[in-house]
Length: 185
Image (cartoon, rainbow, N blue to C red; front, side, top):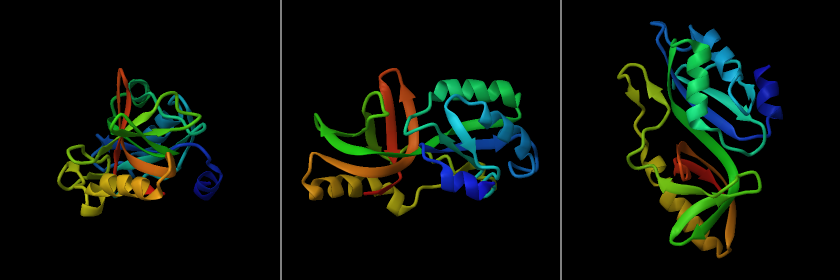
């Protein structure tokens, strides 16, 4: 089932940071989280196995879209009944990198408005270390991913650069910001 989901999924890949309040961790107490993730708006499929090492879950959305993070947190809390802490979402988004007014963003036909790109710097990853009860620290290559992506965009010499960009996603009233942790362009 896991192989079928990974090979057939076509939409945005999202990694959801979850901390189980169960003393045995996310893997041992996965059932409630698995059920709750399936109810989130826009989720097409949920991988049936949690990433125990990072305390994360993998979901795929319908199309190359972005989740409403506030709505997801509310929905998850209602269905999971307080059994888990929802730590945030990281996405891997296929779109085009473009420069606009000195900033860089992602645009695509499925994305309503551009997604601002930013360096990972001070944002915590959703990957978690249970031993320290903190987000896993970013590796040097993760810290430099934004600068490397912008350099790749400039080297390409085009108005837009098709890419898959991965990182923590934040949502405000004005739109989304994707903090670049990794990319493929």
